Length: 435
Image 1 (cartoon, rainbow, N blue to C red):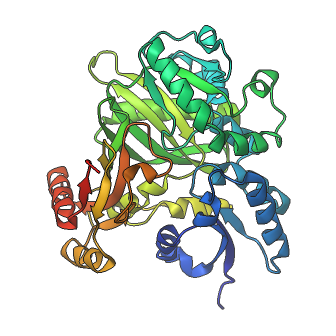
Image 2 (tube, rainbow, N blue to C red):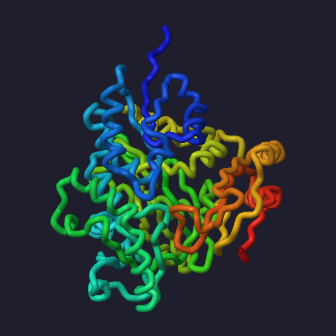
Image 3 (spheres, helix red, strand yellow):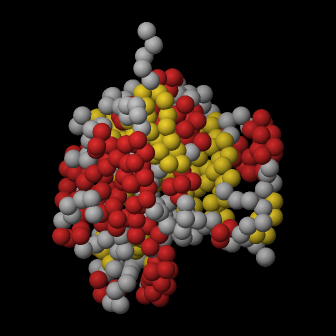
């Protein structure tokens, strides 16, 4: 007897990620439905949170069949809306409050301070629109400043003195509304503590610098109150302030004793905020310059899988970790493979340029297909086209332009890095910084 297909709605669906889900062995039991495309979610100069939320509810209400799961792998506004969309259908999900705590960078730090204070930096909130914004900052220079709701390091700046602070505040005032306005719309669905209600999306968080050492991300989930971490991915940074990601590499080479310490901190915090029945990824720094100290720092938490890591898990473990996301959304305990992939190591490379430039030439679709034949493990996502300027790219970090993403697998780090250099050369991208 043929099992009944599960109807799974993908909020912010895109071809690349949905095709990876369809390639999963378990996908033969699933029927995927688009609940707005990624292009619709990201359309316009700012996210239309109300239109997306009400439109998604309307689409779901009009569907004549069963709704078995609602999933998403994108950051804001997708991640924050999922608990609200699942609620009317009594689908498995973390609570809206637990998700919102993690989405609101200042609220998240306040909760961390209650249970894991030794693993977080000094921090404070600041209103960039307050004429006396300097007076409210209690953290010493140098520090990082970023909106309480940000994505992909957008509007995140390292500040060393008053002159730099005044400069970045002007930039933040001009651009913060893109995420602040939709985030403020989402805040209305929660009963906020007074200290959080006063710090909406138009505010920033200031944090002490913790960028020494090595960075990694724990990918895991909570099922029925039990925390499981199934993979640790290294995040390698580059650039003047080491603020831009160069690549994500899996599996991590950070020692197991340090990974276990990070897992223990993760469990303590997630249980404190009541996060359950959902995936997460959580970023840490390990200060390894002083081995006696083995100091770790908690950076931030995301209440979703990292889509950037999906091909890495597929290449090394044998399945994308969208499998974890899907099984949790269906109310099942995830059953994820380990080291059953084609390669021993895999990475997502982010090809960055650190100045504006005019794009003279990029590879055609035909060129990219030829590239795939030469490098079978390579998957290329090109962000630029001929005739544009790099400054036209949206949602970049504050110090670089990401012109392409390249996923690669290999049997050693040396092989992986050489493949990356070879692929870059074969793409024949031509940039002119003088125009």
